[in-house]
Length: 104
Image 1 (tube, rainbow, N blue to C red):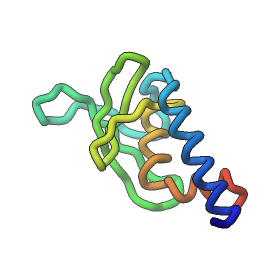
Image 2: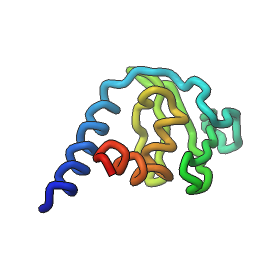
Image 3: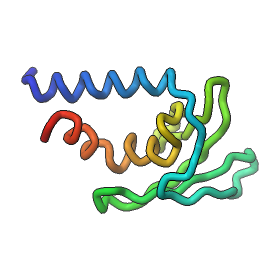
Image 4: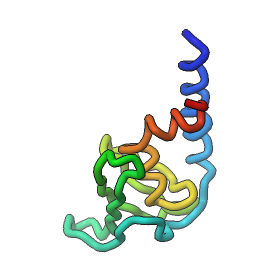
């Protein structure tokens, strides 16, 4: 494995570990927040990419250690700074964020 791949994997592992311990709430950070149907009582957020990669929506919920957002694959993860940024950085802007942190 080359150094660039190791750096990207290390960053992904670090971000994953940070998600487990993050306790920030779902404050507003450049996205929409509102209720949507589905019968589960979740609130949904919609956020736009910082890199023109489109938009994405997902439900948010309060959890034991703070707010969580649901990724498209079905996993619930804790929000980092806020749920809008977490959803954006972990989905539509994921590779752009990895490139930023790896120095590319």
